[in-house]
Image (cartoon, rainbow, N blue to C red):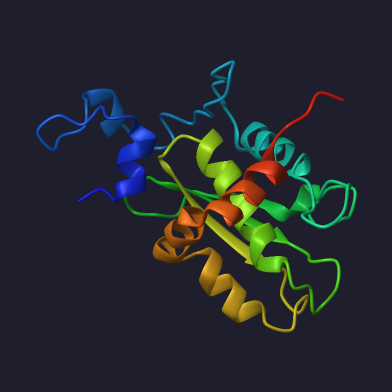
Length: 173
């Protein structure tokens, strides 16, 4: 059974509960990033670079700088793993809050998840974590930003949704 968000990301292409033949291929066959140019990625390195390019433009909720400028995300924070039995690739993103007691770490993780979900094909699993030892409540935050129900509930809040949209909006520099 597909989750509500997976159905939305597929874009209503489900008929009688069955995905079209093209959608049934493995993630390795379809390493696709869905953006304006519909770029097809061939290697893990290209995928990793594309994911990082998406992350680096997210703005900090409190400051005018991007997450890259604040060293919250960095090139080594993205890892690609092909270890699931169904051929689904896992994209693991690790971020480093600016201070160990950062009150907006959950919001930053939410922004990272929403931006990646909107730009990546639905055949990737996202794991988003705070760098180990970088936050005083990292385990609780990791649990929140990797829980589909909590993400859905957060995005139903209009003020929180507006803040996330503002942070992930890409501007031309």
